[in-house]
Length: 71
Image (cartoon, rainbow, N blue to C red):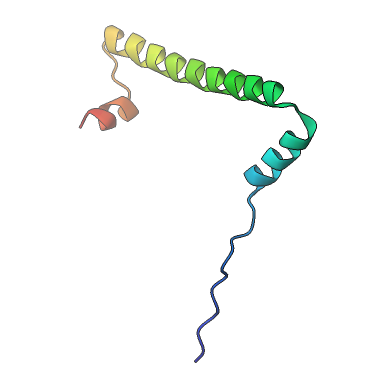
């Protein structure tokens, strides 16, 4: 039985392809602004999850996901 040869290079992912297109279409400043905006969106979502969890804790209801993280 012969071993399957391993590729020396990996195939580009969709993320890499999108970043390549982005670099062609947008200038550096626009690219940075878009990434900063997306980072802000993700941070807002995280804060919203924390706020909901805090409201549940203050109301005396601890969600399972929060209980799992604490143990």
